[in-house]
Image (spheres, rainbow, N blue to C red):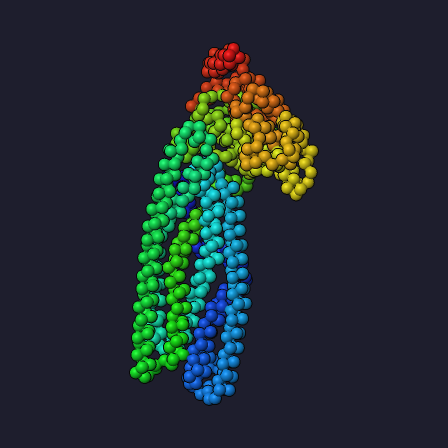
Length: 630
């Protein structure tokens, strides 16, 4: 069940396992490039440590001329023993230059490899996650879309997926950097002076524990922030989509106040999280400052007093060169902790969505007939959305193949809900809906829907050409258009049957004209006729017309009625109508009220009975007559 704001807090419960482990599984699909990238990143980190070793060796052996070996000598890269004479010092310096040059070259190559391979892997994971999440979302049941806001869905597909890509792209590399750098420096420092290394490494577990504690502080805040920004996005999208209503009713102040309240909540939560984060970083800097002072005093004192195990000048400099490299990535741990928690919150939503199961699903062995004839039966059907009051109560109705049924009733009577049960957008609570004598729950959903076309009051048109929107009714025709073929004859024939060909030909580029988002460049009647052409091309066995002519003028209605007559010819049709004149020729008319069927019969029979339908007809006739007189 969605939260009261239509958000996505509920889907977090659908995550199977740890969300970040699921993210890693996606990355492991590309394990060869991932492994190569990680290896290259580790080598890069180790190569970054070599120049400091070169500097220490240059100070001790080239500048001072000492015989202290150091790691490079122990590794066999430099000769042992005291260096005497300028020629020997120059030769040693040249060797150090070569070592540094090789280190920088290797570092450049491995840095390129690591960044390219790890970042491209992150891009592939982003692509896979978005494709999988979108595909899964498309297959969820209608109740999911009813209970969750569009803005939240877009936030998951865009913001959350992008955040996971950014985490893999940056924070994963930072994790490698921290592990490789701290490990390498710890080994080197311990080799030179266990006592000073212990001082330098003491903050490492402290920072780790502090970061773990910081995660517990910040976790609930970032969860709340994600939900707040999703609700804010949904509010902004609703307001922008309904700008005409806001303008018509002059509700600028009301909507501005609603946006301001949610924006203020987002601001307060972000500032609270920012306060914690800044305090955490300040404590890290204080800790590293204390260690610097201790190293300076203890190491310097040993050198001055000549204590056993005192560092050489170059080694002492080496400690401070590494100290910055040691704590720079460690301080980054706090920021990575923030990013980790944000990514975890996003992963919970993404994988929660992927774990959401459709409430309407195909049976184990679905029924897939070669042909659907179009007989429909509602057998004692009761239905309610969620746990609310039933919309339909004990509805029974048999419709023969090719029969046209007009559905009449006040708003909320259950007409649209009844038609949505035929393509099985929802499942009944009790009773059965049968097509050709088979319960719709036994069908493969898509096979059933392939033979059902729906034309609503405000049909949805996609951003694209007029031809593409008509071709949407037939899969093969749509694919052919996408590949750049000429407009198929079947599209033109469907447009002619829908009385749409003439106005399409008058468009700037005819059938190739871009009609804009939701068909915004077309009039209401033109959009309706495109939708009818799309349904005609689909050639379904069952047609559902939901107030298909209620949003157009009388002249346009007459044109649409002609195209609708062609559409429903020889097909089973359920026609919901506000204007009773559009359904008076129906084979039967069904009058619904409060989720029940009150009357049924043809136009003449219902008028003769003098019931609800007769009253509605009389009232509409009087209104139409008054309009004509005016």
